Image (cartoon, rainbow, N blue to C red; front, side, top):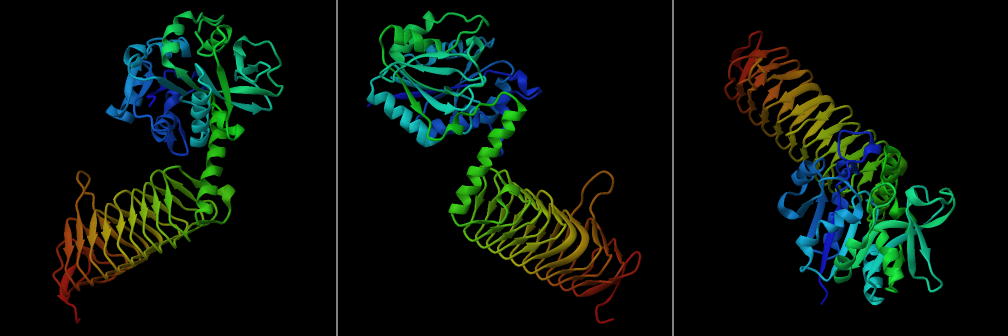
Length: 449
């Protein structure tokens, strides 16, 4: 069985992005550009993946992948042919075929890659490439075919004098190569007028040697959209978001106003959940079945259990267990955890705190660095004073406690099971179980009083 290796070209800084961040690390739908080809190669069954990096891209890409891929350095970005040539020492005796991908085309589908690989193997070609029909060639290479439909040349935009605005079949930046032919012919590639050695020069070399070169059309033309500037980045993200929304709607999720809803690629949504307008589900967010999310909500890297409701609120790295609800106009900051059946109303902020099952926080207030027991009532205006100007301190509230309106809990402090605080109390000392704390500073009374 033929063996494959993958090469991802990620050495370019991307000058046209006008950014301090290297182009391979810009994101589309929450995922860095360079992750798309690496993960696609894995799904295609290619285990050995080499990423070609440069001094400007190496650090960020290594932090992203660690040791899960191999790296080859291209000290100066001098063309795609030079980039692939630098993998020869690593791969020459390791694979029969090479699948090479640019890092800036995140829309290429698994189906198109499979079709290209199959067509290339069936034709016993020395190389194959993914193509698409485009209304305008613009800055893409133009495909030239012979009378038998085989590819004979690729006219690079920088070298082509033809009208870039006319329709054309264009290069998708994905190539299959027979490695024995590839390693023998890479040294023949000459520098262009721009000083770069283009990988596409191999096409005319192969054709001139009467070798077979095939071009396989992408399943959908938009797949080959490349990203060289922020306009193209936004265009690719728009296409990807539409794909993602359609995927979830076909899987049983209701999206009320699709054009206003943003869902990142690593988000998971359960069946019969409803997403209302102007809502963003970002990062690795998980939403269970039968939820109502939005309108006007932003949820980032959070977990939401079955049957929850989030109304016009913000969640960051937080957890809502089944049957809990929040909003409108509330904020779960990192580390917030609402257990099942917790109700958080409007204008509440919770940070690094756990509210246990059945606890109610109806409106207004701040709970930070706290552990709140089950069935606690948190009145309006309650604040945990968790910061003393130097350190953060925790607050503990026991089961069934009643925290009166405008109470200030000055941490570190504990309120026992079944205890009460009166309205406006400033609690600076622990309140024992079943006692009542009132006043400023609070004093302890029997709860019956």
